[in-house]
Length: 119
Image 1 (cartoon, rainbow, N blue to C red):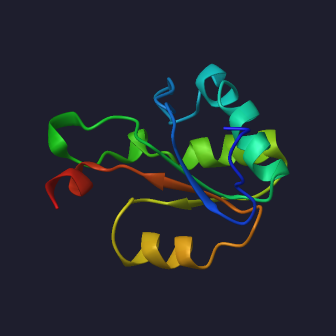
Image 2 (image 1 turned 180 degrees about the vertical axis):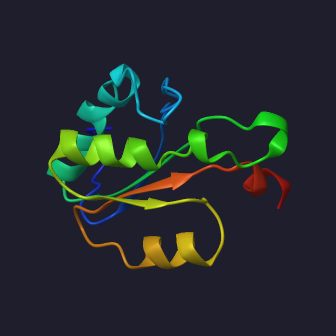
């Protein structure tokens, strides 16, 4: 990755943020989030527009609030010490508008939802 000029470019990174959560939706182990910090920080240090995509599960193809990546965005924001913009789908108007409006150094987390797989 360090052989490619990513300054000002959108960098899409498929991450594994399928982290354990308790019954109230609180992340109980952030190891998988921390595993991606080096790559994300490298992109930020090189003024890229960082687009992350992941999912937490797709039980029977249904969206389940408990399995939302929104808490991951919050934890990641704290770890990076910068806002991580969360969009609850990876396709559609909200995702397209958010990605189009990105500036260098922005981080967006797009959720790969069950609905996305059926489109």
